[in-house]
Length: 114
Length: 132
Image (cartoon, rainbow over all chains, first blue to last red; front, side, top):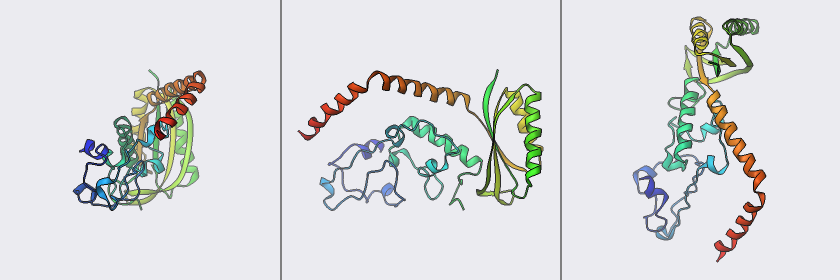
């Protein structure tokens, strides 16, 4: 699934009709996915890149809520790698940090932080 | 075996400043008495909690950076658990992460010092290839 989303620039069908694409979430970092465009077939999907690799962010800390919140959906879930483009090592650190932040009530387990 | 830990805890929002001071100083004395060291105390102030904890919606966050052994941390956590105004706490070991970050930083600095020129030429070489 992940391979399919990141490679396959032109051959894939336009996005939007697949179940995991249906829901609209707030703009995603490193997304660059955008709308399918009218001429679906010719639409070139830019390859997603890891925000942490590009911006050379090494410290993923549980106190940095502003950073972590970008990778948490409205429901409080951690956004999967295939949607954000974060590379595996960074996603691992990210998920640990998010879980730590949840533990100390900086991020919600479910629902909006209110 | 000394390790560095970050000890973050939340006290109830209606706790007065003096009581907080008292609590922090007792923790500090507990640390020093068992051979540890408090490196930093940071009061992060009152914050809204992401979810309700013991029927509180806000809490006062305090962050301690402690150096010491695992037994010391065990003792500190026990203390926090029995201290009534503390509603939540989290201990995170940070020395390994710090070491990793320093290593990466050192590598980056070395690279920057060693090769500012090759990087530039590489970028120059790449540009025509893209346009072609």
